[in-house]
Length: 210
Image (tube, rainbow, N blue to C red):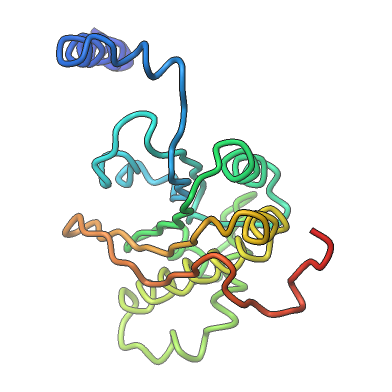
């Protein structure tokens, strides 16, 4: 059996087990999607949102990219965000980074990585803002870990700067925004930042005609 064929085989076994445990599972899932959470996470294969949160299909709406970024020119992210907030009406948005993130580590170097340089530039900007704090830490791992936390915080603020989130805050008093970091070494999620709905942000980034 070829390695990709194993995935198809495992899928059939999973579907069989689900049906045996709950015969109506897929029928319900096909009719309705009503998650309360939007998860913006890293593409890293070691950080699957459903596995590490113990959620089931239909419970969490997921967007993933390198280093869990919220970039104001990323139409993919913004489309997911708009759908989650305006159609699914999620109550919580979670930005979840992880310690040991390759994107964070790469952004801290001066190496060129090709086209991904343009993506890493967004992380470099976070590093530049917090460079004095990060560089005071004693070793490379602790510096990368702290930048991971700071990057998550900045991405939560980037969410709050969008008209999508601000409009939902104004009209529905939701969603709450959460910044988390997952530990690869212990499997534990560490909350590092919270921004409840209608939290004050810099007036420069607020919209007055929503």
